[in-house]
Length: 467
Image (cartoon, rainbow, N blue to C red; front, side, top):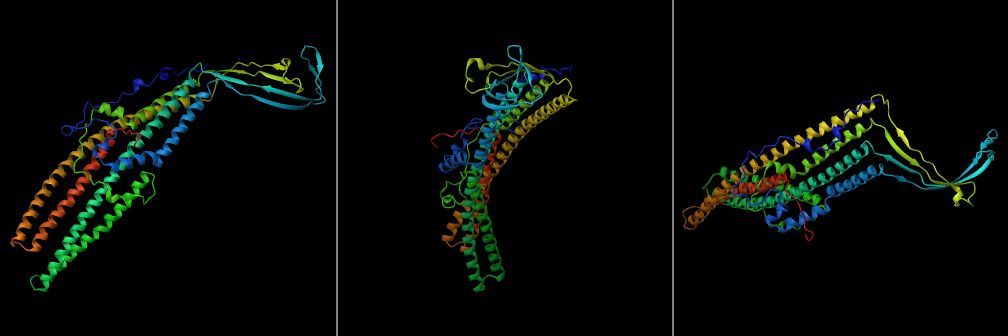
């Protein structure tokens, strides 16, 4: 008789999920957060209607989400199939069997116990309803259902995770587009100023005031600025195509309307990172890993059940007659009842190998779960640090931009009073545009870092029906 490897593993997985979690993040929150951890529809705090509509389209039409939804439907169907195997199964059938016996097989036992003969050739009409039921005494069936249910939940969590990612991608892409538009506008103005400077220097060269070297340097700077525009325009097209794919739309659908979108805001609402323990409950990828761990634990119960006998109830009520005329009469009723026990007394080590593999998969799932917890905590702290660093950089660039604006205003006054030349004023204005270019780049990076923090915190998505 095989020895049972133990049944304690059939217990729920509740006490297994105890990975070490720090009590608070080591990166301090930003001052006075306005939001709450995991708040839903966080992008709406920016009050950009075009962005709200894009996210609504992405949630509805994104191809990856539609594919994931079909996978969830398949998982639900699989769970139903597994559960049905451990419920009574009844089928029905009707048929005609024509029999021709051997000439050497004539004598038979008649139904009343006497001797009789079976005709050499006869018809057999049947209507039957076979019944089969595996009695799940050991619990292997219940463990299979638990594993299927846990895997279905993991698929649902993967959809939640994908939804968070797509929303973050849409927000990131939107502000990549508006940031590129700002940079192109800034570049066009810089090109215009450099073109004016080049023209003035050429006039001074012709007048013998400046050397040809200065004219060539100005031309080189103009060509350098102009060469940046095709790259920015190519990046803009690439981001527009990326956005159309995220929203499940035709590639060029946003080409005519993107210039009307609200530009990148100069500040973002601060959010509360919350506690690490809250993060673990909130992140769908961690919940997905926990469900896969639960499924692998239930698989151990399925493997253990293979060491025990299986019990079946089999039966077949039927109507049996050699003629279709009297097939439906009560005298045609017959039945079979066959309880059955199956036990793999010797399997050549197969059952033990299945159990060892199940336990190894559970250990793998546990390690993966703990890895995701540590990874999630690290992602939040990295996002907090990155957001704080970019925010400080942006504030410094804002101060630099304000100083450059003041310098430009003073330069304009001196130009009007004749204290400086037009060329000197253009140099000051060009410096303002160079600082502004850095400020625009940092502003886009700031909001993209803000988006990544929301993704790391798994801030929720709850799309209203009227969007």
